[in-house]
Amino acid sequence: MCVVAFAVLWAGGVATHWLGDEQSRAGQGWIASLFLFLAGLIVLLGARSWSSAVALALIALVGFVVEAAGVYSGVPFGDYTYTGELRPQLLGVPLVMGLAWMSLVAQAREVCARWRLPFPVEAAAAALWLTAVDLVIDPLAANILDYWRWSHAGNYYGIPATNFAGWFATGLVAYALFGRRLGPNFWARVVGFAIVLFFALLALAHSLLPVALIGFALCAAQIFLYSTSHRAAD
Image (cartoon, rainbow, N blue to C red; front, side, top):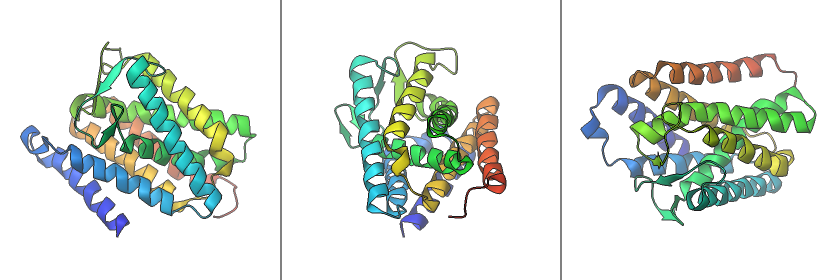
């Protein structure tokens, strides 16, 4: 049921941006919150062990705490604030942001662990993957969707470089702490892919061609990695 609801919201969100107007998209933050909640729930239910489930929950907690620190101090992402689009919120941060971090870190694990790299290299690769994913998410979330706003505009669609440094650092810490405990998770693979593809399609709908190309490249890379890696089948 969760998967079906997630798929319906995914398709509806894409269709709204391709076929609807700006007025029809106004006030739909609650739908986005439900979308992210379902994404996180599906990933959590996809855990094959209690150890993996606990690791996922701890990643969500780390993500939320870092976001709260970012809102109040500007560290590590830069000076930004959340709007009222995504709710409910605690300490100025939408609760679903922890679930979003959890889902994307789990996807990074699915991608990077297949190569059987030394763990420090794997953790760095996962952090780079997460940073690349944010190159796709942030231009839409901060500008078109108005989920958060930057106090000082940067050179990449108004996003400061500190944001991407923060994503890399947060991803690296979260993965270094809990990545080893994340077992194979088919639904993390699917949900993460769907989120990246979702934002790539939205970028294309809004004529953000470089952003869309990065998103499609990440989707293609995930497919390629799964077709060529030598990790034992899940």
